[in-house]
Length: 234
View 1 (cartoon, helix red, strand yellow):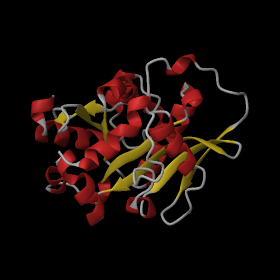
View 2 (tube, rainbow, N blue to C red):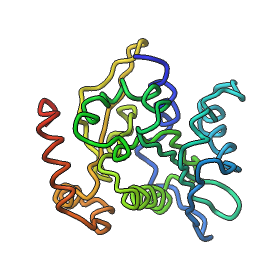
View 3 (tube, rainbow, N blue to C red):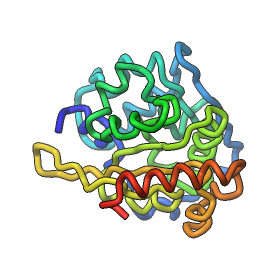
View 4 (tube, rainbow, N blue to C red):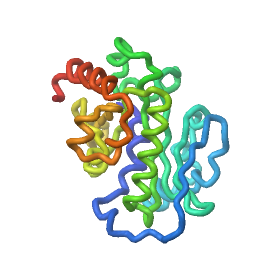
């Protein structure tokens, strides 16, 4: 496995199962999209705080905070006032740079044999401020990400995370579709996937996304292909 997997998973490592115990301030949450080419603003500060300050690392200017893919991805951000409190970046696989960065990890060639790569996205640069890991912030972040996926006719959303985050992503409807990827240091990354508009699965999970489904037939077709193509995982 290459360093790309490390850069994706490390920001996620700091989350814990006690996130719902924090009481958020009463001020209003606003969610918005930062489109390709727009300035990231306070998202940079949030990434640095979560990736390095919280984890005790010192590489303040590491490319893990920002990289070339920021210029072409859509960044979802949840804000309180002028402060970013949650963020997630999205890329589809139609760009060669995204294929190079993440293609091997997610076995994207198998998707490419049946789906336009514009229909498959990867989520990365996931960060939530430590005192804001509450249901309202996470729901707004994931729901806006899902809304963006529906608008772009995305069929599959991919993410790699450490085992400690399994329950978080499972709650929203993600599931493992490949065995864990083992990194050179022996740690594991879970390769998880969300089929958009897979209404039966989202309903079984009681996912907050289940009420956003628009086209269940498209979800059934994508789920059928997934279960046939990655049958060893189901």
